[in-house]
Image 1 (tube, rainbow, N blue to C red):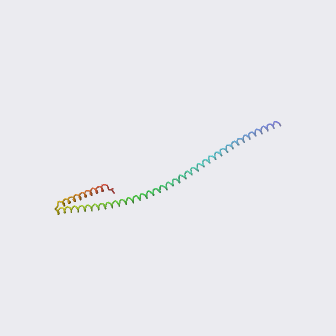
Image 2 (spheres, rainbow, N blue to C red):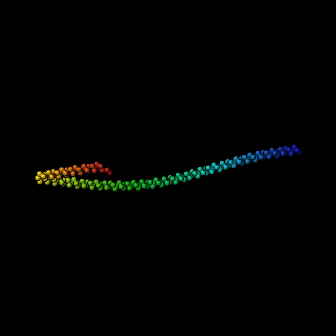
Image 3 (tube, rainbow, N blue to C red):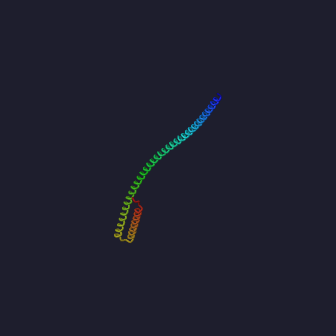
Length: 166
């Protein structure tokens, strides 16, 4: 009976050691599983944080893009408005320039006509009055009218030469 008891004791101890080894092995596996789960949670949290940052960055970029589009639209509208203003100013300046051209042309024609009248009267006066002093006056009057005509011609040439082209 003692051998059987010893054998049973040995077998029980052996089974207990095997069970303890299995329990210890399972405890190690559980500990490793817990660590894997913990690390997986950290990875999930990091991925979640990165996803939140990416989403926030995307939202910021979208808002920034929307603001830039709005700003560009406003700038385009301001450029168009300013262009319209400049075109209106240009048109007004061109009208004023043409009016000035017409005025200068009319004034020039009137002055040329007056000079021609003076020259004609001077010529007639020189033929009718035969006095030495009068002849000198008529000659001075003719020279002065010729000078005025030359000055007017130079001014018109200079004006037409320097006039902006349409």
